[in-house]
Image 1 (tube, helix red, strand yellow):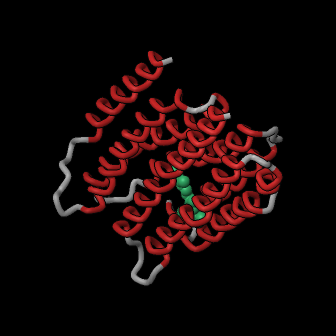
Image 2 (cartoon, rainbow, N blue to C red):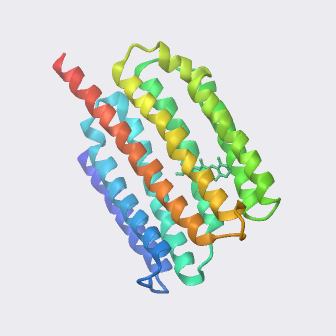
Length: 258
Ligand SMILES: *C/C=C(C)/C=C/C=C(C)/C=C/C1=C(C)CCCC1(C)C
């Protein structure tokens, strides 16, 4: 098991080195604070990936898949951040297409995370996941169409908001919400309510980025857009994983005491 973890880490390191070679044709300027934020998030994602894979074996078996998914999310984001950083540093433009490809993969993985956290302690129908995925797709397709100019920024925003509101409904009062409420497991309740805060408060940072990036007077503002999106990714990918890891550790030690 340890051996496998080491292989996974070695793979991450090799990927990191090769993709940094691809991206590093221009140098980061010391006053490019947006570029600096791209750099910080990429390194934090690398560290988080190593951490989650190394910690996977420390939690009870039922929680392991959640920790694996957390590591996949930060690992995939790390890879995309290497490219996004390169595009920003070289062109000063928003790396919209890479950003949305990253979201298209990592947000469904985070939705799977909800499902796995519930499934770690009780039986859960798969419809819980499909509904969350549906909301995710509407949210991201609307956002991409608006940002990439396939429709007006305002219309894209409204479609994206509808998808997010549907996810919130599912997580609070829909099937997922009521399953969590019925469970008697304390760690599950802690993890689930922390995840709710992330999806409500943490995710609210993204539409704010969109508003300040596209919808305020004065037109598009890529600086504000990217710095807000980068901060949001730091919070929602890394902190989100750490919350699950902490709940898993707590659940693991309570079991050991029993
Ligand atoms: C790791 C990446 C994550 C968690 C990305 C999440 C993205 C969102 C919650 C995006 C939400 C948006 C809206 C709610 C409105 C329209 C525009 C979006 C796509 C930025």
